[in-house]
Structure formats: C-alpha cells, structure tokens
Length: 399
Image (cartoon, rainbow, N blue to C red; front, side, top):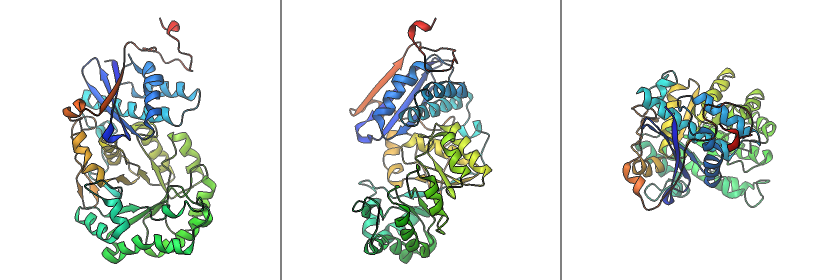
C-alpha cells in the first residue's frame, strides 16, 4: 500500500479547523485534523511534509513520523510543522485501523476504561450560549450542564481583568467580581459540579497567588495554564504555594519539551493535545513518561470531531488519564454536521467511537459545500522508500 495523495479541507464556517485526508492506492482514506493558526500548518503540510510522505507505505507510521521529524528538526520544529505532522499521523492510524478492521484503541493495545471522564469547557455557540451564560448566571448553566450529564465545567473569570495591568496586578475589587460565577455555581448546585479555572497564561505569580487564595475555599478541581510554559520554575513555585492542583501545559510540543517539565515536577497534572503535540503515538509516549512520575494527564480537545475521536481512543487506552476536555457547544452542533461523530455524555463520561480506525467518517455532503476550500498534493513524492537523515532533498538527488 502507498500514499498517493494528501488533501487538506477547510470550511469558512469552521475557520479554526484543518482536516486532512490521506489517500492510498488501496482506496482507503485516513482522516486527520489540527486546529488554529491554519495558514502555517497548511504551508507545512503541503510544502514540507507531503513531498517526504507521498509514495511511502502508510502502515509504517513510526518510520514516516521519525523521517519527517528528522527533516523538520533541521530548522527547528515546534509550531506549524508539528501541527501538520500531528494531523498526518492521526490519519495514518485511521488508515491502519481501516486496513485491519480494528478500532484505534485496539491497535494501541486495548482499553483500560469503557467511558472517558470529561469536563466541559464553557465556550458558546448560538445554539448553546454557554460562554454568555456563565457570565450572566453560572449557577443556571451548572444546572443545565448537570441535566446533560456533565459533572465538571471550566470557566475563565479572571481573564477580563488582566488587560489593565498586562497581568502584573489584580485589584481586590477585580478578585471579588471574578469570584461571582464561582459562588453562583456553588450556591446553585453545591459540590455536584466540579469547577476548573482557566488562566490562559495571563498573570504573574504575585497576582496568581492572590487569585488562588480567593479560590481555595471553593474546592476547585484545578487551575490551568497559569503562566506561559516558558516559565517552568515560576509555575512550580506557584504550584507549591496553593492547594489547588495546577494543570500544564497545552503549549508544549513533543516528549522533548515535556521532559524538563516532568523532571522539575512543575505541575500536579499534565496536559497535551494530540493534534498539536505530534499525534497519537507521541501523546501515548508523553502519557507514559508522565506515568513514571505518577502524574495524571489531561487531553486538550477543543477542535473538531476527528480530534475528539482520537482523544476518546487515547483516553480509553492511557492508564493515567485524568480527564479529556470537551466542548458541548461544539459536539452538539457542528460535529454531526461535519461527520458521523455524535458524542454522548452519561454521568460525566463520554462514549468511545465504534468501528475501525477512528470510528468516524466525514459526511459526504460536506465535500460539496460552497464554503469548502481544498488543496491536494499528489504524485510520486521525493523520498519513496528513503529514510536518509537531514534536510537535503532535491529532485535531482532522487533516482
């Protein structure tokens, strides 16, 4: 079997998503995805990665991944190239599952759980205005989420106050205002709803310690990405001065960036994103590293249905899973529009897709939408059967 084409799909209505289809000469098509900063990932996919991958055997996932990684490491790698490689790698696992008729979690070695614990990130859409609701009355939203089977929610009430000082100082009055939705949740539903706090790396440690002191009486599940991941020592210092578990960091990519984080014991909970950090196998490697430190892992999952499916399979397989992030406003609206992925939540847990590979497919009509733009790389490629090292490919070198 050979890779014959790499196709990218974008829709104006879902501008954050880049869907990748990897075509083979057997007729099997694998699905992958990445999210955000799409122009860079698109250029990396078609300009850098596709010439190396076309003509290769899609079942050689490790060989392809390391070959591509070696080439992109030549000029630095963390960013567009890894996002593009993540999407491609996930598509290769989908191909393998379809080839052998096995779900992804079986290919990884099977399940350790039959449902995936989740928290809802309260982003909103017109149909599910969760973001607006937690600003108006978070207690009402908490009741609504519980009615939907969701038992943990994440909000970011302190972000709005960071801009005045560029995150260098937060006033007592701002703390008081930001605590309103937290209090509303506890008053409405007590401890039935777990509360996560997102910080979007907006604050310095002095401000964060003030924020944490206000939050601690409310039994907060976690506080996430308190500072940029470039400050591991400061994040560790903060984590040692609060009783709230710290989550970090979706900003890191590949096992090499997570190594120092784990060695330094920076946060009590690790977070990574399969469509950003290198794909399925790299996520599993990161989780295994974390397990050796007895650190649980959260899978960041705020993209589309393909990312969601990959996260569900990984979540079923990874022993030290804490939770998988999910967004009700996404999976109840555009997931079924784009694909056959229709997640179900019961008692705070998500269902795992059935079927070979990722267990989902794109709906045929989305390939005919007027807002679709696509790009395809096809042909023989530059490196069929090659595993040479270094960024030195030229057409005249290939015979």
